[in-house]
Image 1 (cartoon, rainbow, N blue to C red):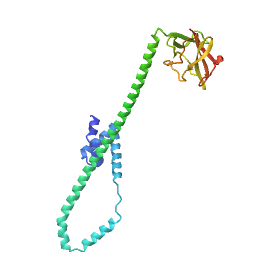
Image 2 (cartoon, one colour):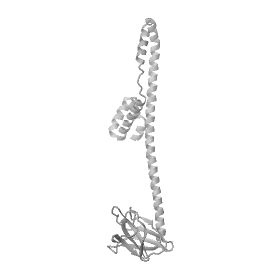
Image 3 (cartoon, one colour):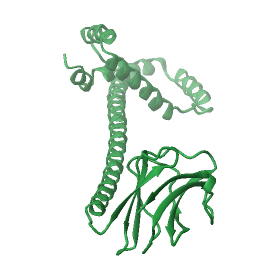
Image 4 (cartoon, rainbow, N blue to C red):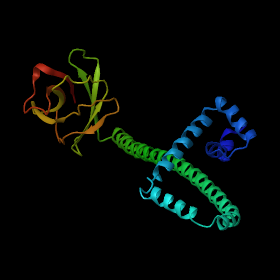
Amino acid sequence: MNIQDYISSGIVESYVLGLCNEAEKQELETLLPLYPELQAELKDTEKALNMYANSFEKSPNPDLKSKIFAEIDSLEQADIQQKETNSLQIKPKFNFAIAASISLFVLSFAGNIYLYNKWNKANQELIVLNESNRVLAENQTKNLVRLEEIQTQLAIVNDNSFKKVDLNSIQNKTEKLATIYWSPNKKEVYFSCNKLAKPEDGSQYQLWAIVDGKPVDAGMIPLELSDSIFIKMKDFSSAQAFAITLEKTGGSENPNLEKLQMMGGI
């Protein structure tokens, strides 16, 4: 059985409103323990029915009771024979009108509950769809940005005007922690992270260019590091080497040589 088709047939709404015949009622009650989605549909429909009923709940007019009893007293004072005749003529019509009104109300009520329940489901599905589209759009934007970054990196790496400067660890001379791509002609400097540990709290890596034997600030390296990081630093037309120190967050005017992390000559 396709339980979704069974639910969509409106059988649940009919069951809640007491409009099912005995066979339909027994069938639904037999299927309930087997299908959690049918149980959920029944629960949602009952909840929607209660919400709908509460929204139309009205308190009776306080004058209604006195008016009813006044009308009864008036009828009792009429001629008995005339009352019996009127009763024979009016009662069938009155009973028929009540029955017709109740039937129309039940059908209208059932239709409204069914439409409300379907609208609520459609609204929830629309919310989910909009959220999915939003996430897809964000991912697409991130992918486009990343693609542009990769294209920039490839262009720099394949550009013969750029010199590749490996920055090796001070403690382990053979361990390459970062790479500098520098073009003297374009005066552009790019930093690429290879294997750089996250700085301790309150500290940040700072790049220095050694120009005529003196360290010159070349820019701060972002606190969030990853192997894919590739950022543009300050421009230099001449340099003999590059070095990185660990400074306080935000950087320093002069390098703390006691916390020199790596260095690479050109």
